[in-house]
Image (cartoon, rainbow over all chains, first blue to last red; front, side, top):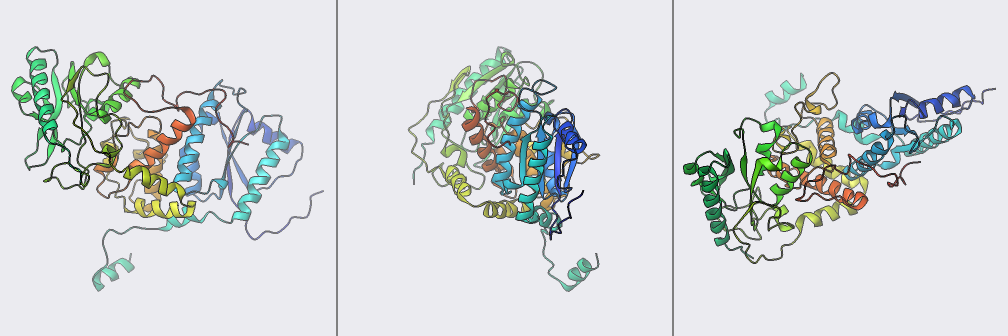
Length: 166
Length: 305
């Protein structure tokens, strides 16, 4: 029944921040309907898209995500009336800020997936995963994570030696 | 080189002293927040005048760079005595005051605003022994739209004829916008890597009045607190995001930065976006809700699948 798994050189890590009322139920529906989608996505459940702080997205990238998906209820369907309307403005602004700092916005996807749209969930996840796979690993944040900045220079052999022994 | 006439600052000083002395003598206000001359020539520092004698020491000069609205925020409570307060405010400070009133941090009724007809102030690196000119004026003053105060209780001084300045900051913003994401990343990486996390940008900001900053918290730690490039980038993104739709554009963060990181570019970019998208602009009239605290059902969602 399972299609033969294709081997890829690079398996991207995709983090999905989803709202519990719509997208999480939608992903659940995709599962119970036995639809296939890439296992690269890690689903994190939140009460509402309004709860998803932009810091979470930043943190996901910093901790090694290659792509981030944020998904919630369609406008007007929010369980808390207006959570996704507020989130929409916040993410619109945050997206611009990330773009201005130089992050490739193709790695960040927002979507509305309702509890009945198991098929759309599969489509969104597959598309993002394949796009990020084609783009390769998210190098910028990982390299930055490794970097150190020294305000002083190692001018003497003693300092150099001390530094190397750390 | 275009120099600005110094006399206008003297007339402002005179008007501030007169008004401050009157307010303190009549006991209309408990204190006047203003500037006094610094010990070195060409400097000034913020001061709280509590008596008519103190009021005689108040000045206004191109060295009066600070945004005094800061001292009325919750984060700096205890500096200004309780009761009605008068404040000397330049155009950019007025926007900050309006922002704080809009966020219910201040009551307009508890304030006497002495608006200053401000021709401009020195930049952080500008030579202060020379009169204010094209060479040493702050970048924000080059594009100032609010030289003459609006909605204030008293206007101090009159504005001289001002030359047209080259909008350096707007040009820099346009230059960055034209870059590719990789070039922008390299630009910001270079700048943020220098950050020493002294948090001067936070401490000087009138809008950073949270009792506990998100970035000071551990368990869970949202932003790495040591001055490493990764945490620095996160801090500056978080700072810009938390100020989006609130920032008054006083550029104090950039001025106070010891490492010369062009922080106001981030603020400017956010302000530009919020203006284009939601027609929001920081102004001198308090607005009850900022652009990110409200929504419309037909907001743009072209970026959402």
